[in-house]
Image (cartoon, rainbow, N blue to C red; front, side, top):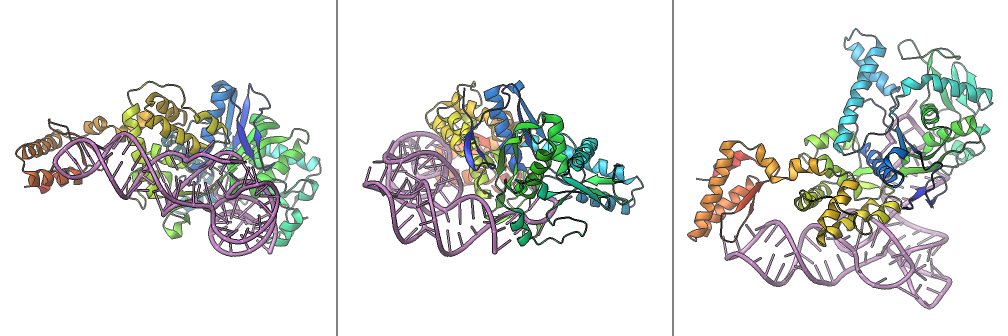
Length: 477
RNA sequence: GGCGGGUUGGCGGAGAGGUUACGCAGCGGAUUGCAAAUCCGUGAAGACCGGUUCGAUUCCGGUACCCGCCUCCA
């Protein structure tokens, strides 16, 4: 059996992965707050842990892996958007507006992530459907002396968990020294964090022993992972920016509520994504959603197929910062296009030599890809295909933009005749050795997005680029 | 200020204490009327300064620079 090795943030070492129960390998990944379209940074953990999900299913069997990824659907940004709609004149109650907004955002999320070739997790719990469990866990933490209620809030007593800060390598005292937060007066300790907070009438809220309110951010992951995966499970994943405070607080809550269980064994964190070397931000104009890329609504200006986006992400190890650049996207597209031609009609073979070893070595997707290149240049196209399938690069989807015949389907009769005519005219010009004319026609066709493949004696074969523009064919007299 | 991560050839990007990463671009060649596409071949690296070692880009220490987190952003 393949031994998977994973870098564990908790121990800061790469370890052999040994599941608690090989018959049910359990993974929890922090999912999105559903207030808007997912941006391309959100897509990174989704792709990274999708690859891990596929690897685990391969090694332990598809029915022996449980992957939970949550939706945070209680959040101030969601509330703000719902309130904006209400103020705009929508007469419906706030709760309904919120539900509509989160339902819509979840639908978008599913569409966009599916376009990236990711499998659906086993379960996708919504925070609002686990409020009862959160209240119960909060009460349990109070009962055990790890939390206290004050002025409608419930706060976690950080000093009651001796290992607080272990995951992110901080001590409570250091954090207080460097803290820039204003400390609420009802906190016993500046680092204590909220498990429950009161809601005003214009905010969504749930009845609780501490009055009408809503949960703090961190408790949802503790409550839902416990409910769906049990008090201990194998892998907990998310972006490195969640390491502190979110994951630190999750550990504190869960370890204090279930002291002997150990909570998550392996903690994995993906590094952040940049765009053209800079942090992605709306003010820099380099902020893109996945949908923006898919629809060509970004600085590159062209539609980036989901498989291409996925391929670009796979080229960088998850633990390193990744830079999204147009150049990378172009190269990835060319590589996939070339590979597609040689794999489309080929059966799935064995995985290429070295492929699985790389992937099992802390998810070295970039290394695994190099073995795909080797399979390609070695003529082992059925192995190349197997590797692509394994990584979730769906050739059926690639066909939509890489298959010349597929592109021709959408070509009108007139345009097809026009292209054929020009290709034939060029052929005639070549026959009569009028190379000036032949080259002029060639330049026109290329500019219009027609790719020519010259044959020895017969008329050239041709196919279309995705950017084919029939209007440009009219330039020739 | 505290904590964490990074720095590899023109660009992107991996592994390994000593032997070619790989991809793109470049260069040379095959092919072509010339190109494109395709194929073959090929030069080029390890931020800086020390240390360990027979030998380090790979291990250890320091310096510089970059990035992230510390503010419910993956």
